[in-house]
Image (cartoon, rainbow over all chains, first blue to last red; front, top):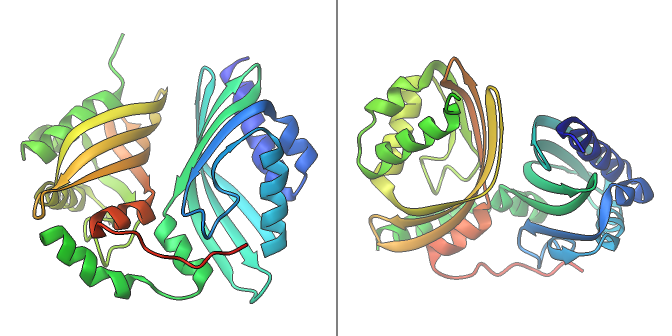
Length: 151
Length: 143
């Protein structure tokens, strides 16, 4: 498969994921997909290290349970051979209070036979934790971090 | 075959940080460069957005004042003519505390005529802060 078709596969996957079309999103993935999203799993149980494409439907279901609206906008995409990298701006509207959490995610995909076999993603997780909790943690930790860096 | 701009830029960046020699880096940055490292600027003043070569060189100097790079591993790299995306694993030392920090970093770069025009960097910042604190941050569990 060429870079262009791999790139299209990732765009289709993201479109289906954020549209809540689990079947279409899963169709873009290898049965044995290996995925890691680096984030605190206490707060984001659908993230972390997962194996198998059933994860896709579970992740969509959890997000739909928590968020009424989920939007994404691809702001950068690069592809080379079997690899594709995307930077995506995401906006999720929380069901419980209507607030919108926004974050930019970096995702790196490796495809095998035109399907996603490996997925690695991360984002400014501290900022997202603050948005999900609904309060600022920076003040609480800023002094400690600066102090720890100087110890 | 011409070397991709990313490799020249990476070497120059390493030299600017570890050896405090920014001259090569300066030559590889566009005057109107846009630079964003997503993260808490209250804790790490060298994070955040910058515009223009002078501001970017200044932030690189701030990074050099704070950390030393010991090792980096390229986990994933995609190169196209004037852009590059990479996921790297860095081993750093915080200079003031001598505390080791291990970071995974995503870079999305665009170049023009061999010079950096746009750089966006993402870090797993929660992990970074826990490492800087030297202790886990306890969060509520959400089912």
